[in-house]
Image 1: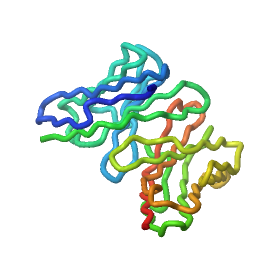
Image 2: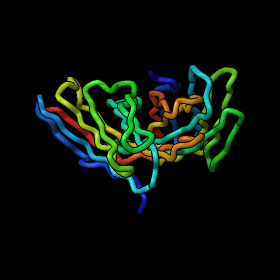
Image 3: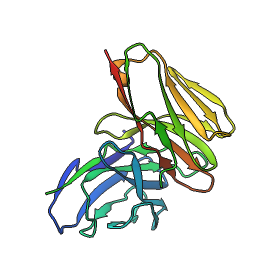
Amino acid sequence: DGGITQSPKYLFRKEGQNVTLSCEQNLNHDAMYWYRQDPGQGLRLIYYSQIVNDFQKGDIAEGYSVSREKKESFPLTVTSAQKNPTAFYLCASTVSGVENTIYFGEGSWLTVV
Amino acid sequence: SQQGEEDPQALSIQEGENATMNCSYKTSINNLQWYRQNSGRGLVHLILIRSNEREKHSGRLRVTLDTSKKSSSLLITASRAADTASYFCATDAWGAQKLVFGQGTRLTINP
């Protein structure tokens, strides 16, 4: 089945560690996105990528890094510089075009312990 | 930066009643979309309305768009317990190449 796969679903991070969240899509979509969602809140854009080997910062990029070496993959690294990383992380993708209907993965919960 | 703001933040109604949620935004848009999120899950696209459209229907959903007031509403008719979820509006501003989401309305349908 076509879709977006995020892993792991649950992840625990110790203080000072970097962790990487995986996002893979087999929809042949050009653009991919990472959003952060805090409990009871909306989505905030971390990074997005319109094409391979290119990405742009969103509204809250500090403390995060991404890469886009392959069209189907857009991993997000939460670095130790992100002081409050506990949140729900959502990966999404879309066909670049006039009407950006976005398809989402099921999300990853990150908790700092 | 949050483009859309939903109102109310939370809504609780009885099964069978209609639910109305509103969204306001700040800048000119190409289109406005509504998404649904069940607790702890990803978002699912519901409906898209273009800036030159005023009303759109999809099953029990009715969306209106008033670009002069920079606002949109989502009406769910004959609500069901399974409609319990959070609903988000998202705006696609001209040239932005990204969607900006509001804070969401948390809808609870009581059986």
